[in-house]
Each structure stands twice: as structure tokens, then as C-alpha cells.
View 1 (cartoon, rainbow, N blue to C red):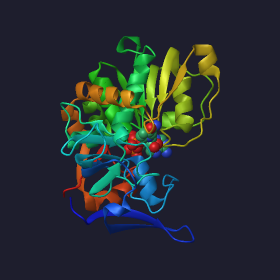
View 2 (tube, rainbow, N blue to C red):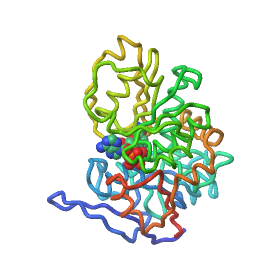
View 3 (cartoon, rainbow, N blue to C red):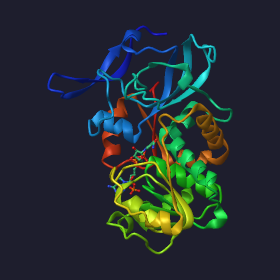
View 4 (cartoon, helix red, strand yellow):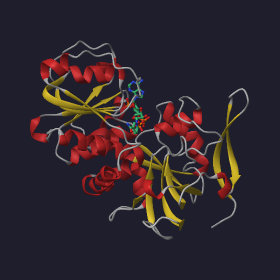
Length: 331
Ligand code: NDP
């Protein structure tokens, strides 16, 4: 294990002005935990963008090493579940928010947060999926638990070109769903169709104030956008359908009415990836191995090195990233 290593560190001065620095760190800069992981791959999620740009109150402990996801090799462990050399995945659990995170060569973590790398998955693919893709899988699993299946009608995916959206489209397409993709980037229609979308609609159709009920267009959906978009998705969901709400790219509000719930029996399914229990995570990662086409994952992800993380964090907040960004920490 190297004694000194590089990492991104966020600090705040007395006036609460934040600075982003590439710092030389040691293990003493990492918070407590019973497993030290050598970070080989990580990724830039929307939440990492909020942390690094300071656009959202993601970081709640200073100084902080951001980065909510990593894949790597156990360097040392006091946890009976893990030994040096084991390959592991970490998503969420407040890492990069309240616990020093993934944008450094090493991360000290709690073994209870780690998932052994599933057979059929490697670190690069796991981080091309990342929290965004694993959240897409949690959303699909929630729809299935509600009894939604491809025979019941089309499903809508909002924020289609984003990390959650692209992975959700690829999974739902592979499972045989007719997928309607809502996007503000119609120039990416061909890409979305290759991923698995059957129809593309402009996000403007869903971004204004919603009527309590509207024409039934889909049996369910995965919504990464929130606000008016989620209200419109609900108002257009067919009788007995369900919508998995996982994001807030348009806003945190939900200007809706109870009409879809009490007149059409529609259900709103809340999705949280951060504190999801281990059993649900392991199920989601196993499903990602079987239900996500790895060639499609390659087509929706791009690779950068450590030096590209800060620029990618700004780009994701500006809505300029298509799909997923995977970070090769050895580059
Ligand atoms: P991305 O930035 O990759 O994608 C978000 C997409 O939303 C954009 O690509 C864009 O798609 C669309 N979008 C952006 N701004 C607006 C807007 N003003 N109105 C309508 N659509 C908009 O982010 P992710 O996919 O990684 O994450 C999506 C959301 O999910 C975020 O809010 C994130 O915080 C949340 N999230 C929640 C998790 C949970 O545990 N619940 C876990 C992971 C993410 P297009 O260009 O196609 O229109």
C-alpha cells in the first residue's frame, strides 16, 4: 500500500466558500472503517456533480473526499467477510457525503457496506453501471414487484439520455418492454433506439403543469426527473399501473393531485439507493449481470482518468453527459 496517494479534497473556509483541490493524502485523511479498498474504478454520478460544483447540499462533513461509488481490491481488512485481494463494489451509504469517498487511490470503508464483485462482472463494468445504473435496476425490480410486465403495455423512461435513463432503457428493452423514452435531446433518438427504446417523445410534452388525469399512455415508468414531469407521467399512467420515482433532475417538488391514485389505482413507488439493504443490493447486482447487455453498457459509457473527474462533474450538472462516465483511477 502506498503511504501517500492523490485524491480530490473539498474544503470550506470560515465564510463557507468551498474549494476543490487535488491533494496528497495519507490513510490518516480517511475516516474510520474496517476495510481499506484500493480504488481501481469509480464514476461520476449526478450527486458527485452536485458535491463538486457545490450546487447541492450533498457534502455534510468537511473536509470531504467526494465520490459515492467505487470498485476495487481489498488492501487490508479487519472484517471477517473480506480478505486482501477480494474484489468489491461500494455504492452510497453516505460515502462521498458524510464519509470520505471514492475519488482517491484508497478508501477506508465499513465492510458492511461492501458487495463482493458478482461472478460475470468486473470493476470497469460495475462502475459503468454505478449508482445510476443500480438505481435503474432497483426501479425495474420495484415495477416487477408491483406486477408490471411487458404484456401489460408500454413503459416510459424520463431523463432518457442520463445515467439512470440509459441503463433503465437498456434493461427494460432486454426484458421485452415497449419503452417510450422522454428526452430534451431528440438528436440522440437513434442512440436511444439502439439501446432499446421503441418511441422517443420530447421532454417538453411532460415538463409543464399537469392535468389531474390525462389520456392513458403507459402502464408504468421510471422517472429520474421529478417535479411537473413526474406529475404528468402519473396523470398518463393506465389503470392499476405504477411509476418508480428515483430522481429530481427537473426539481424536488411534485405538483400533482391524488386523482391518479384514487381514480385509476396508480401507485407511486419510491426508490432510494443510498441506504437500500444489502440483500436488495445483492439481488440488484445479480440482476444486472443477467439483464443488462454488456455491449449496450459499453455503448452508453465513456472512460476518463482521474484528471477528468472535476470537468465531468460540471458537465453532468450542465446536462451535457450522455449515459455514464467511468473513471479509470490508474490512468
Ligand atoms: P444525469 O445527469 O445523468 O441525467 C439526468 C437527465 O435528466 C439528463 O440527462 C436529462 O435527460 C434530464 N434532465 C436534466 N435536466 C432536466 C430538466 N430540467 N427537466 C427535465 N429533464 C431534465 O443524472 P442521473 O441519471 O445519474 O440521475 C438522475 C436523477 O436521479 C438525479 O436527480 C439523481 O440525483 C437521481 N438519483 C437518485 C438516486 C436514488 O437513490 N434515488 C440514485 C441515483 C440518481 P435528457 O437530456 O434525455 O432530457
